[in-house]
Length: 133
Image (tube, rainbow, N blue to C red; front, side):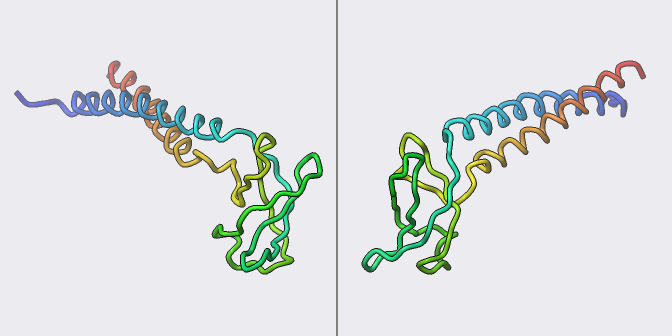
């Protein structure tokens, strides 16, 4: 029994609709969760300093206390003592910092989720249009 081209396209659109909507929604929610789990980060300016044989990052928190952590990130390898660097720290744990923007956490998952959601919506509309042809 030969399959009609419109029937084949309809089956493909149903599969893309299910895959796009289910997996796209899941990936988008996971991406939002990764961003939300990391918590709130406060941005501040810090300075690279030499502490004995090690290089550290020093910054002030919101209360004026000085904190430091090792300058062992990719962004700080080329910096010398006295250079400024932008860091993010948590208000609950100001002794930890990061040198990359926390807004990028989960961004890839959110982007792939939105693309798959878009494919699922377009395939769903195409499936409805194909029903009337």
